[in-house]
Length: 384
Ligand code: TRP
View 1 (spheres, helix red, strand yellow):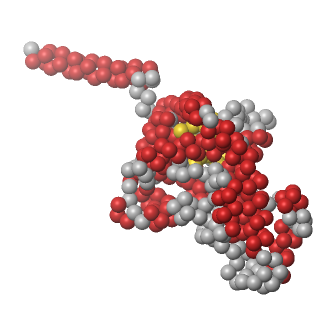
View 2 (view 1 turned 90 degrees about the vertical axis):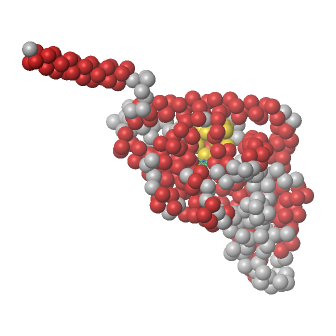
């Protein structure tokens, strides 16, 4: 039987505007978003600049968040996100997201939040101790609102977002069973290549991040990218060119795995057909790090150059970029208010819109008055 009411396929994802986006964001999520956009399989696609979430640990530094909203918007557009196909919006401009963070918080225990592995890691990194902001602890709940208030079916994101999507599924499930069916349980979509889910920093540390100073940004110029690649950590046991080297856990090879195609080999390093051949030579010995790094720098610059050019054009008309965000935020608010309306009706907190509720309340009070009047009349009668 044909499904009479097929669920709309909705994609939503986002980033905190705490710095420009780097190549880890690109292979972890951004590249996949552009592909999904171009495949056109979704009924609606949203990309959110999560300024509210960025403020949960930057409350005293709003300027940083403010400055990076435009940076992240430029990165999206430069990477190929088309605002005619994807609604790009700013989290704080959709009031329902804050509103439902509040209602959803009633459905989640403190113990459950404290079990979230991503939150745990982040709390450790920031060393909050007993000065943990309640807003930061609450951000998985707020993120559930980001996801649920748009009827999201798929969240394309890095592996670290898995616990957040699970939290959103649980909240949708709990809400639906307590108040009635309103929210859709979303699924995460991570990149197929395991490597792309967690690209290390250029120093080989687990995660690329601005605070560790180990990132290559989408907006970096050619020279900077080359310099960063040439300074990359490689196999510490590969001291001489003739020494056999390790490719496993070697960040230079991990980056090549994530970025280099056979076309790149044909264009920049035709002595090798593909990465397998290059790896084999490195493992045998006789291949120097400098050769491999030079190749990686060329590959990255090849991918980043068209983005740099688009970014440059976009930077010449910044008001137009803000207009894209403003229009997107209006569209996002429309969709969120539809889900908000239905959820508040399910919760019974739609006091003024519900004519039946008003009638019912009126009847109850009338009945109360009638009974009181009857009793008074009876008492007056019996006194006589
Ligand atoms: N937590 C994400 C990050 O760290 C940003 C984000 C906020 C997000 N809301 C979201 C991602 C909703 C996916 C879906 O960058």
